[in-house]
Amino acid sequence: MAGRRANQVRIYDVAKVAGVSIATASKALNDTGRMADATRERVKQAAADLGFRPNAMARALISQRSFTIGLLTNDTYGRFTLPVMAGVSEALVDEGVSVFLCTIEDDPALGKVHVDAMLSKQVDGIIASGKRIDRRLPVDLSNLPVPVLYAFTDGPEEAVTLVSDDAQGSREAVEWLVGLGRRRIVHVTGPDTFASVQERAGAFRSVVGTAGRVLFGSWSEAWGHEAVGQLWNEGGDAPDAIFCGNDQIARGVVDALRERGIVVPGEVSVVGFDNWELMAAATRPPLTTVDMNLKELGREAGRLILALAEGAPVEPGIRKLPCQLVIRQSCGGGLRG
Image (tube, rainbow, N blue to C red):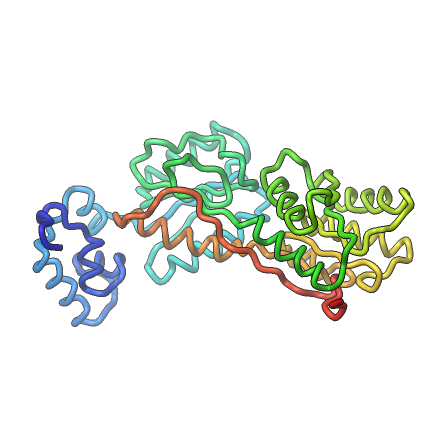
């Protein structure tokens, strides 16, 4: 800390020297929250030693914070936002910070109403979340007086943006199928206008080769059913594995194969993507799939928005969090060749 002027010392520095979180340092300096007397005294002594004198923004962080975070989304169905919110809440509950959710569908006017409401409640920060990673919410979140973090939606270059690593998850799934001895693997996925679809298809081809076959369609069981019809009506060598772009497509694939008397996973392995547990567990056989770890993504979003709200340095840019392959019966884990 040598050479730093007193008015440049931040609460982040105080927390680091005292060996506590920024939230704990804030509470100690404001004489709020529950903690050991020794901890509170250590924080105050660190502040005194560093010559910490909060500026206007820091005073607001210490004494005028609302200890609330706004979560704004156009994912009205909640398929992606609800697990993200669960993770955000888990990350913040021990810090005494609450989260409230506002859904805006795709209505810019409604989005502005909710953003204005969040600001009137003096939220400490806003997490913007969505239903696809290559579209921004239909509301202007620039130049707000509070930090904004983007989770599972597109954000500006200067922002912190969190997404699942689609390519890594896809590679792991296809490599698993190859490890089972599958050689005629086909990728049945969603619309090619989605960035996530392109990421997953690219990763698929990076494993099986550039000639690897990809069938683009809709995010639906009906498309999975239709794709099986296309593949088996062509004649020639049928696939021995199908990697699907989401769990709905995979369920349609499994149902279509069953109707044709094709045994899953004995004759064809099937892997999905998303780990939508209601869908994956209800598939027969239960579906092996890639979990995007949205809850962990939410936890990381919660930790980072709190750091941003408290003035800690956070490097902007896109952060890709790893996915996880969840093995169930549909791929035939005992079929290694």
